[in-house]
Amino acid sequence: MSDKKHNAILIDPKDNIAVAIENLKKDQKAIVKGVDYYEEIPLVQDIPFGHKLALTVLQENKEIIKYGEVIGVAMQNIEKGEYVHDHNIKGIRGKRQAN
Amino acid sequence: MIFNGFKRPDQSVGVRNHLLVLPSVVCANDTARLIGQQLQGAVYVTHEHGCGAHYHSSSDQIRRTMIGYGSNPNVGACIVVGLGCETMDAEEIAAGIAKTGKPVAAIVIQKVGGTIKAVSQGVQTGQKMLAELSAQKRQECDLSELIFALECGGSDSNSGISANPALGVASDLLIGEGGSSILSETSEIVGAEHLMAKRAVNKEVADQILEIVHRAEQEGVKQGLDMSNLAPGNREGGLSTVEEKSLGNIHKGGTSPVQEVLEYAFKPSRKGLIIMDTPGYDVESITAMVAGGAQVIAFTTGRGTPVGCPVAPVIKICSNSDTYGKMQDNIDINAGVIIDGLSTVQEVGQQIFQELVDVSNGKLTKAEQLGFGDFSIYRPLT
Image (cartoon, rainbow over all chains, first blue to last red; front, side, top):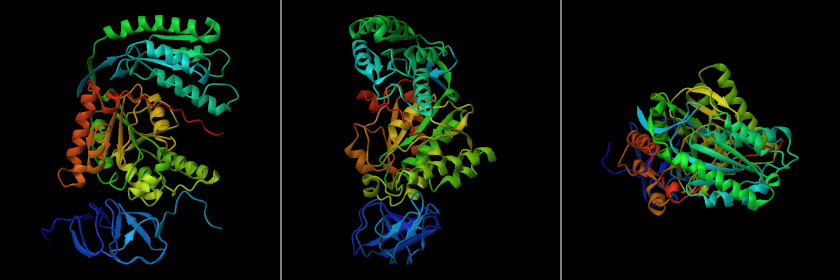
């Protein structure tokens, strides 16, 4: 464990995304902390405060996990450290299913 | 635990002692307003409902909400103002409220002969009611008499990490004291219903949770809604999908078992954590929980909101320090300190619980200080 102050958090050990707790800039490192978890991840894009970043490579159609539960699926391949939001993930529930 | 509240004839307990002026129909709004404005200490509401030609279930829901609202223990006395030709008969609404034993009057504009006479009669009646209410003293009451309405609005990605789990701690503390909490907004349980169903006290309640969520989802799809299309503020706040929003939302309900599932504006028959089936609109949802008897509302927000309730205090809890800094005039508690690493979910939960006790004892919330009283009844489409 490092003493470096974290700027992103892992909510549940099963999660594959972290949440930024300050505005993070491209070329900066996300310092992600969770229970028994610590990782420094170089960022590919800016991540606004409260928004999500990928902790691993997320292949297209991969389930996105937050709070240890499914919040949606990747619409495209997402790199580690990439910004995760409604441009590259989508929810599954509450909409007309494609025929 | 003890607090000082107002004991009502039906054994319920209020944290406020309001005189409510309630129009039974949209046409009586301005007359009700004139009565309410003349009486120092009275609150009045306006709405768009009450005329004829409602579908049956819609009329039932509106009538139930109006009677429930007037019956709320925070209302010490009530004046119902009607026009005379509407579906929502003012005398019938008043009779429904009068079952609580509190002073209630009905004034019908067509019967008394116009607005000026109706206002005159309303003000005279209201003066007598205010004299009586103002002489009532707070008495020792048990915290187990409280129903805490759990609301959220303008959520952001922090809500599920700070404000909502802290509110969940406060809700569990109240339930530990024998009290109740109501979790609402069914469309914001979509994607998290399996977790709530697991916490149901029995299979019947679990099935009801799954059923109301399925119904809300189907209804939304039928109307061509895409629930995943969140409000712009939610998206700017970092929420990407309805599942993400729901999973954050349910933290408001803490970890207590779910005792009962209620339709819109019904009164709980059990103590503990209750789920009420309401739409995902803040004011319509709060109105339903208050009509169900909730005396205090907790309202978590990420983006900030000024919403208040005419008859019940609304404790606003903010998920992040940035919004709190900008909107302190609207927000009571900053749960952003959890994100900042300055406090824990448990500590802020304790703080919210203490605020609930203080507010129940009479401390005014920010929304009360500003005199905010939002009111809206959800009318089902069928």
